[in-house]
Length: 195
Image (cartoon, rainbow, N blue to C red; front, top):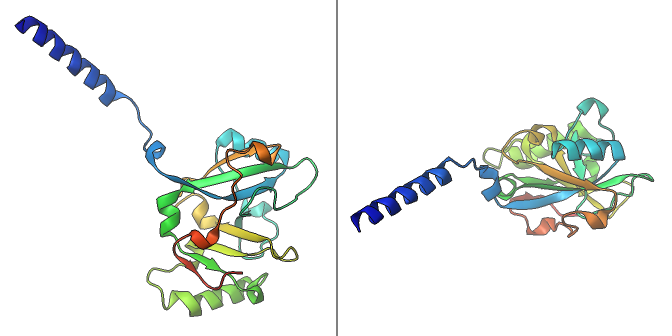
């Protein structure tokens, strides 16, 4: 009887040791949020899929309407792109996205980076604690494609701030892990006037 209890206790300890030694990725326990969708070339999509995350080269950045970084739309295929382009679904750690300010950039500052920074400094930096416009998600309509909206993830946020960006791309947007549009109005810490 005592021997069977010792034997049982031994196996419980062995199993507990196996569980404790199992490698765990803490990111698997973090809630995720859809940040947006991108339309990119097939080659870019393959790079994203190979790494499972956004790859960004500022030297190749085009169309910097509200800053340099990665642009997304709230819904899949909202940016038509070119024939043969692929569609990407981007997610990030929800707790981090919730903690980062988001700012609607007024139309008069589109394509005017210096003016936009001056406006942000006067409007938010002096009034909001720990506000840094380089570390803010930016929102606006897409110039010449109004009322389609866009979200800019500035360069400073692409690799830092614990966003843990992940991306999945498919040839058909209907095959993405999610195709539910993002509702920016439901996000916390959104500043400025929605467009």
